[in-house]
Image: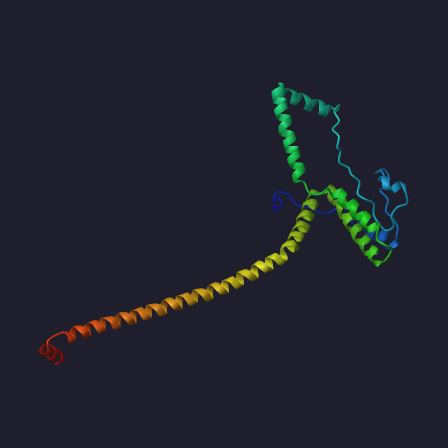
Length: 237
């Protein structure tokens, strides 16, 4: 996780969040729907009866089409015309950009708008009971954060880090415990086996030393027995 820059003060606040959150919870409790503010447009689904108790699906605001014609676009076009003056350079650059575009698409996570829309529909499909109220409250609370995070990079990064880390924590929690337990047991087994091997080696060393002493003593006794009687008697004096 990339730590926030120390050169500026982080801010995850949004002055409209408290009001948006309170309205969402009131909507969930009252079985009404919160419409977009005037001038913001309405999602297509609002053309019919609104789903009770839910904030709307967040609106998609990203412009997918690139429209030329503005002064900035004309300036950018002239820049690229100078930078990539022949067909080969243009072809190479387009291939490079398309490869990067495809890589980004492959590495991208799920679309947040699609996730919110699906959750909205799932909650709306719940029969009217306490569970629908609780789910509506949670969806509306997430909606309030979602709307604030769209305008606040610090908040987006914070929420992504917190909930991404939370998911990873619980996804790997059981495995981490299992790994820890297995390491503990294997360590105990290792220490026991190591101790057994050390004791066996020590016992063998002692036995070898005893056998060596007995062998030397037997050899010396045999050597003494092989001497003439007179010398044996003298050696005993």
